[in-house]
Amino acid sequence: MQTDAPDAAWDIDENHLSPLACAEARLRFALNYAVLAPSTHNSQPWRFIVDGDTVMLCANRTRALPVVDPFDRELVISCGAALDADQRYATAPAQHGFVGSVWCAACP
Image (cartoon, rainbow, N blue to C red; front, top):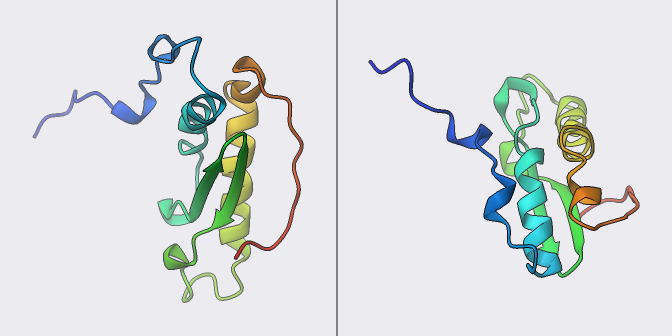
């Protein structure tokens, strides 16, 4: 068993993003921070949809845990953690030239 294997998800190198990258590429790069967020039972019940300069954070119902979370309370909290991680851990959106706002709505 190898105990010193690197954890690739945490190896986010901003030098790999070109300064000339389009808005969509910069947003996709910034989302690398969001997927590191904690989630209940490590279910990571979120899905990001990138469309140009817009990102939608949706609950991924296929990762719901109906037995331990029948009302999806923890699922919604986990999605909020992903949104917060992207904003807090790296100031990623502002660092990559985005100023945005957050809208809460039901996703399709």
